[in-house]
Image 1 (cartoon, rainbow, N blue to C red):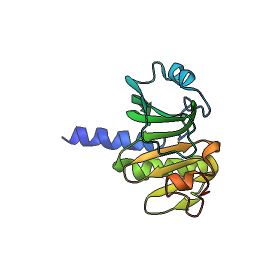
Image 2: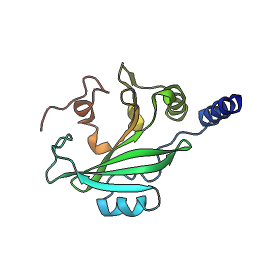
Image 3: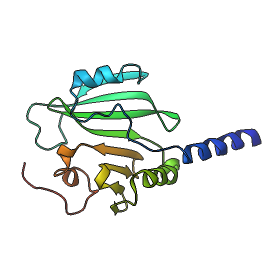
Length: 165
């Protein structure tokens, strides 16, 4: 039992020093075909699905999502959701655990500087288009083309919602 606790503690310490960066497979603007090629070998299981109803604004044709299981991030296999609007990658959710909040937010702060916004739901690094979400525990990355809409989609940038549809 003591050895297991020591291993868990050492693993957490090692991850606390790990450098935080947006995974290289996240190439905003990539098409579904390009993204699927990029994800080859990155997921233990992958599924393409249509989001209906859509939650993004200004979807002209369709909103798709690639669910990727087993994606390696901070030393663990993760579930990642790649959201595609009109055949362009615009948003990524990377699932983490509640227990990782302090470690990941600290690593994000080292990488991006002080958060631009904090509230009960999010810690946002607006300049780098990244955020920590508390419930459920997730990391969000968004593309520049969502800048005007991100505050409408999620309450992470209060007062930053362009109301045109």
